[in-house]
Length: 129
Image 1: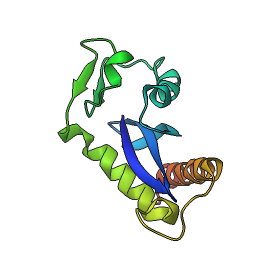
Image 2: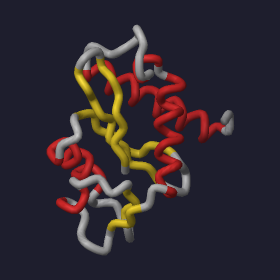
Image 3: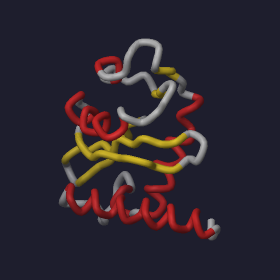
C-alpha cells in the first residue's frame, strides 16, 4: 500500500492504492488526504483479504490498523507500487504533476482511475499487454 501525492488544482489529494505484489495491478484504491481517516477507507476494503503480511512504505498511520508482525516495511518492495503510479500518470493527464488537465472533481478523478484500472485489467486478461 502506498499513498502518492497528486495535484488537483490547489488542493492536494492522495491516491491510496492496494496492489497484489505478484500481479502488479491495483486491486483497490481510495482518494483522500494523508490522514488515518482516508487510509481507514482503504483498510475496510482490504482487511478481509487472506494475507499473511502487508508490505508498506512505513507511513505513520499503518500501525493504527495493521497488527504488529503483519507489516513488512520495505522501500525496495514498493517499486511495483511506484510503477503502477507511474502508469496511472502515463495514461491520465489529470494525474500529471503540473498540467492543464487537472481534475476539478474528486468524483471525476475516482471514475477516471476506476475506468483506467478496468481497461488495463481487461488488456492483461486478453493478452494485449
